[in-house]
Length: 315
Image 1 (spheres, rainbow, N blue to C red):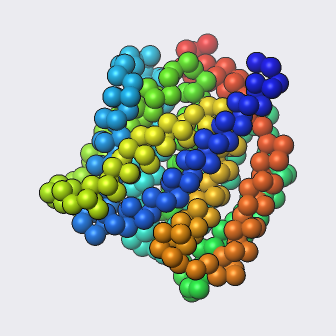
Image 2: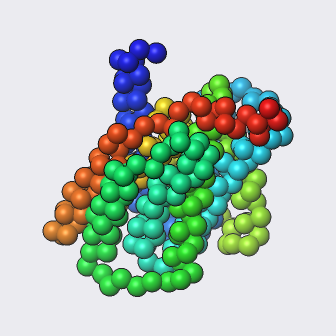
Image 3: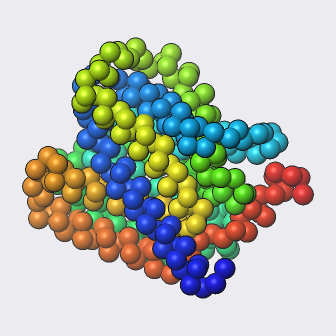
């Protein structure tokens, strides 16, 4: 690949990441509407089953098992990035403030950097600019999230949110490992969804689950669940996983910093909420932190495939 093509490819990867975060940053509006008629567990199951079905119709080719060790990686991706991440995030919201969860989740790139370092070694260097950007981004995100309200802490809720950030970091790295094999992105994303749904089944017996599907006759419920299932789940997991394949786990995960920025801007446009001066300052500082984190940050590289071949093939 020429230098020009490589630059264009990485540019496309950045666009995919930004697109995904813009969509994910607006999902809270749809979720807020759906929570008036559904439990969090019900919303998760419906959206991811819908996402799985959509992915099958987009690419109706069966991905045959490639060996039990590689299937373990597929299962771990579904368990970490979908089942555990969303369950932990939703349960955390029961015990702590939404603002706490929003800030803590944004720590995910920090953990991703260390998991990537453990997997790829020197191919995933821990750069000074990354950590400087992380500090600035967290300051900006805190200004956005905690404006106008007293900050309170819940050991249980905040810890669950932190666990959600940790499991997402593992998902990002596992996704990069599997993307280095020549699987179509839609196929492997669908496999993640398959395992995620399987792992969600036990939660149905532990958490409230008795969805009133008749509510979907109402346009406000139907349109919002379609948005979450088709766009935020099926399409956005494809675009996010494609970005990870192009840019690497760490570089892509840095865009998580944008989530609170998108959320407050969406609230301003859709809900006509007004941003306070501290929120505007937070947006600016977060953007500076993001660009600083991305400065001279490179993909973990295709050699990630070679690193894990010993695990996959006993080589």
